[in-house]
Image (cartoon, rainbow over all chains, first blue to last red; front, side, top):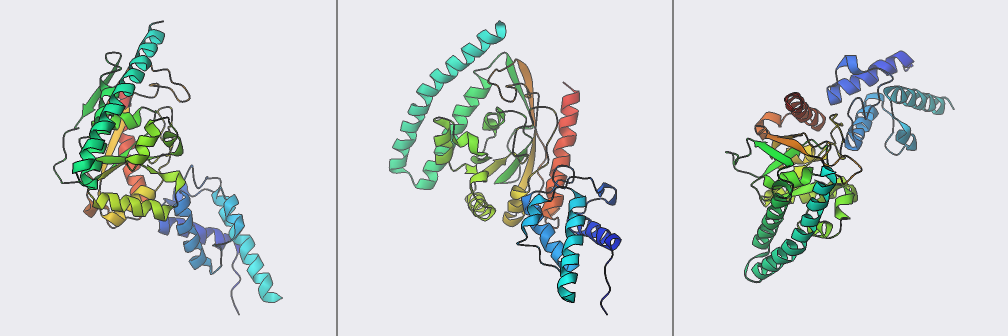
Length: 93
Length: 247
């Protein structure tokens, strides 16, 4: 049986993506941080972020319009949590 | 009152100089193009733009605006280079005219919309980064670097208008990695109000420009673009802070 990922695990794994892909210090990874203004990501970095998140969580994000609304790290956590729930509900249907 | 007189005098001489120098230089380059290859014509065209800019920034506002360059002599390592600068004022692109190299600048959309100057920037091969997808930008930038043309870029993307420094956009750093091109950080301080953002009013002041040591490809070849852009940003930010303190 497949292990159901918890919200805390999602937050931890998302932070790992930021640490591994962008070498951002752990202390900077606070939920309210704006990923553009505070963490310094740009539109090209977002493409790298999407690829890394897809690999980490085994989900498809690339053409998801909701990515455009992401501003803070908390938005990223919430987006992945919703996405994982959607994937889980599709699996149970 | 003195400020108004200075500005009227500056803009009057600027228009007069432009009205004479631009047609004369254009005619000269047009004559050259009849006997020279396209590549050499472009070299002379960009050189002419440099001469024009140098006079605008060094001679016309003197003595109320003084410019101090540090380590601006030729770099020992052969070029081309990517010059990465902080961006506080609309005068920044003119200040770069003193770099003794053939170069183009990466600009926002608005400089291309300037009367006359915008057309010349386009002819010289300046890259309007917001008008093209990254792939096209990268292809054109790498092609220019391979021709030996250096690139000047303000990766904050817009003028800060003050002493703060915005985050860097990573496009040019991806190009530097792809083209294996060395990066030269350039720090500008003192021109926050020359002119202030949203105004044409030049204020007297002292502008300082420091060219920092070259960052060779070997030093950043293993870095990711995100790490590289922040490394260069930190180098510039630290030096600019020192320059601001010495004001």
